[in-house]
Image 1 (spheres, rainbow, N blue to C red):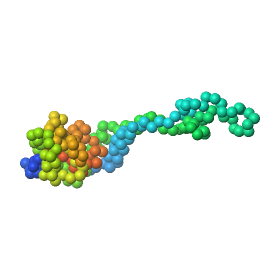
Image 2: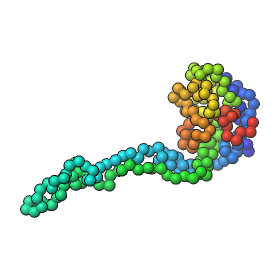
Image 3: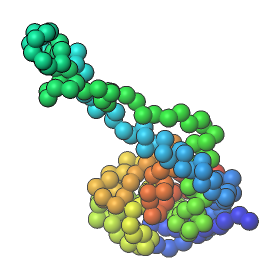
Image 4: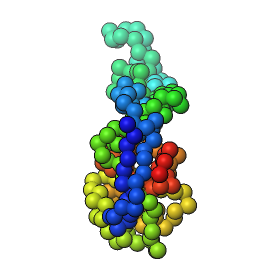
Length: 205
């Protein structure tokens, strides 16, 4: 059964209805794929810049610390060997990439699963269009209040809608993205998803 939502206006009213695409907002969330894709996204954010020095990279230790025989101690060739304080590190971390390969089908399925989860929880709002004459954070706050949006809000905005971007961008609870930037992790981290008629994927008004 198709999901129909009220098409909201900036002042909190309605101006019609909009039908969500079942292929995007109406599937059964695939939790296994969702987990795999989100894990890959978090792994890709890791810098992987940790670095330890091996005995070849540690400064000093060029001279043999004591003679080979006659001391009663185990023979040593350098005070920068791993067993000495200040020596090199064995099997320590080196710069690396934590990225995991995820194909396009899995990314899309995970995104649709996340969007469907939000739609099933009645956490999707569609606004006909934003009508800010000039960029004002105060007007953006008023719009959020009129739409009764609280918590973390992800707004999907049009690339050319600079006035809307500048109105909302200073609000710490609002994340602004373009439709092409939608991803499963950010959707799951948001309490509300706000689209416009222009940015709603697969909309059939």
